[in-house]
Image (cartoon, rainbow, N blue to C red):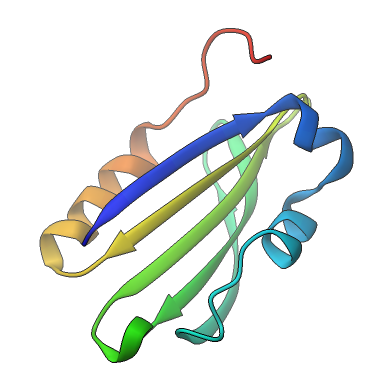
Length: 105
């Protein structure tokens, strides 16, 4: 089933950078084909994303993105499950529009 998870944390930013968050908290290599880690940058955030394909033996793609703002006050994680072209279009919209606003606990 396609979907998206978005989380942001000041607490995790104290212990994790983008690489470590992707390395230690999330991994799907046992369920998917790991295609690699790629740089991510937009006007607000920089980080990395991991790309997994063929998840569960079907044509499902998973993207895990860990990113921070320039001041590194928090770290965020976006996890997206893509199953078809419409989901890819939704992913583009997610990446073009996500923004953390307000105070984080």
